[in-house]
Length: 285
Image 1 (cartoon, rainbow, N blue to C red):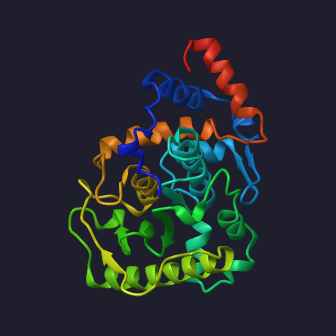
Image 2 (tube, rainbow, N blue to C red; image 1 turned 180 degrees about the vertical axis):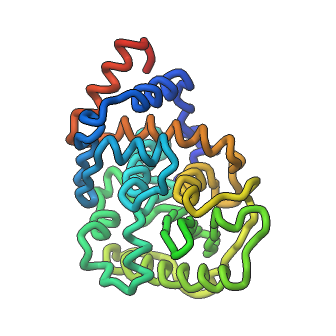
């Protein structure tokens, strides 16, 4: 298995604060006719279209994170891990699932027949051996907001990372909800793994669940999607390597804007044109 990014030294450096600020300022003053254009056209594992307005509303303003935005961010996180991987080619420590996986799993969908889910598992083994991953991160949107489930396949442990528990902890009701959801998602992971791989070595028996209190502040349902992307990026399987509080979450928001603008395989040329304009005008990036 691959090493985690922190011990392997493959954690990306934070983008320049000046660059992030320049992008944010550009968005704040951009004309609506520019923002209304399609900024993201990304085909795999399923086609996503996203306008600049959609991006600005969620990553500059305070609108709740959409299913599509979370999917785009998970794709970008996976791209960054692939670019910085310093282990054997194809080995990756973690797999960022897109939120449709948890949505369909909880709803008892026919997972192995859904194209977007097939594409998340059936990747080129030379570039990504999905079956060798140590961790699977599954963001899920539940009735009250977003949460992240981290599945550790070596320790057979599910860590429930729920931003809405804040500093008070899990209620009995929320624990029951998460136990139900994680059971469905775990079954879905094993169903897909056994369907797509002939050498899947793991068993479903004797998995444990952990419900840590790792939030330093209390967060709203509207903030929970942003929190889940933070947790996906900074949870190392045991703890957060960066504290989740209001200040760090706001800095993370600006970094996400930078990351989405640099999404690879984006067919739309608008982000690259805007980045080139910012680079030329402000001498950043």
